[in-house]
Structure formats: structure tokens, C-alpha cells
Length: 308
Image: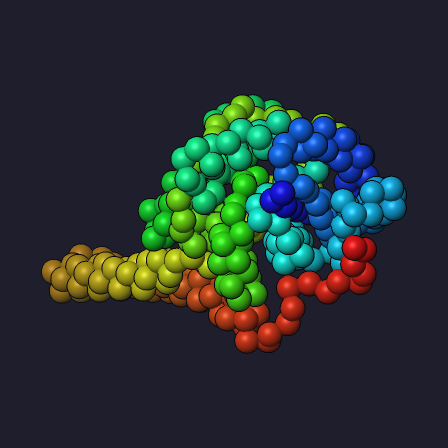
């Protein structure tokens, strides 16, 4: 039989590991597939690793555990899981059961029926999320899809079923800074999305603060488009032109005998251009920092031990 690999990145998820295992095995045991579950412990500080190892010891041929030396982030954990996945089909799931295991048979059926290479999922609602976070998420998708060459579907989850060829293509991309939502669509292939209502966590609390989500969104923009660089260049040119016209107007007014406060004009111009310059330097700095990370050539993660 074909093999299904289930990649599960985890950080401080001691309350959900057992619940996830029970829910997902109940579904996959009814599917005409062999399966393996690859838990990736992303430097958890609670009992997450012990929970994983208990499942591994009870089901050694089914449950594998990748234990990081420290917390490297979900992107690194996802990459490690994909690298260790041996399946003909590979899926990525969160252990909090916000990715419903019951969709796996339907995803496989859709893939085989329509000849898809990828069957993804997307939330059609964000019920249960803070409204301000939902608003920013929608604006992010609108913004990034105007700038990049591929479309990142609004509400798309990492939860998707992929054929082996798709996974190999994703793993062939060697960049250090990774934005998987973009990588999944950048590699192409025939993709279909299944929709579902938002599901809240089965236990525990989300590890994604507003700041972390903002940083993640900023990484996605910087890694997939150079439009901000062009915008800063355009803004600098436009503002220089505007200020030149303003100075010409003030010169004409001065020659006409009208009172003009030179100090006020000078201060406004300095502050205005200073802000523009700082903004442009900040944008360039983001790109330089990504380049610096790539040049250093450090690994995305370090594995302390692999329990196979």
C-alpha cells in the first residue's frame, strides 16, 4: 500500500499531543493507506517531548519523533518534518486539531478523482479570532497578492495533502528564510482547496501573538517581492519633486515681498526628508538582513535526536 506521512510541528503542546494522535489514527486506520506520524518537537519547555516519546514507545513503527536542540520556529519544524517524511503522500497538520483529521479521506478522494497534485484547505470564516487580527490577516492577503507572481489564497492553511513530487520540489528550494505559505504555491502543480468553518483549538493556547504574526507577514512580503524597495525609490523621487516645487513657491513668494519664515520651512524640510530617508533605509535593511542570513549558511535547525 501507499504510505501517508503526517508531519506535526509542536511547541508546548502537551495538552494536545495525545488528543491529536487518537483523532488522526481513528481516521487514517480506515483509509487504504499505511501511515507514519512525524512529530517535531520545536524546543518545547513543557512535557510535549515526553508525550511524544510515550506514543513512540507504544507505536515505534508508526510514530517518529524529531527533537530539536532548541526552539527554531514553526517554519524550521515544518521543514524538518518534510525532510523526514518518506510517504507517497504527505500532509502537514497542527496538533491542536484546528486542522480536522476527518478531511483526510475527502482530500485523498478529491486528489484521485480530479488528478490533483495538491489538495489544500482554507477557512471561510475566522470565528473565534480577535476581530483586529482577522482584519489585519485579510489586508495582508490583499496586499501580498497584488505584489507577488503567484496567489496565496486567503484563509489557506498549511494543512494540505501533497504528492511526493510536490514535496520533493519544495525541499529542492534551499533558501534559509522560508515562508511556507508562499513556497507551497510557488512550486506550482494542480491544486484544489476544500473549504471549512474555523475550528477552535481543542486545548491549550495559541503560540502566535499579534507581534509574531506581524513579523511572519513581513517575512512573507520581503521574501517574495521587491515592491517595497521600488516604492521607497518612487516615494523618495516623488517627495523630492514635491519639496522642490514647494521651495520654488516659497522663493517666488519671497521675491514678491511676502513674509516667509525660513526657519519653519527649513525645519519642516529636514524632518520630512529625514523621515523618508529612515523609512527607505529600514526597507533596505530588511532585505539586507535576509541576504545576511542566507550568506551565513547556517542550518535552519539542529536535531538533538531522531527517534525512529
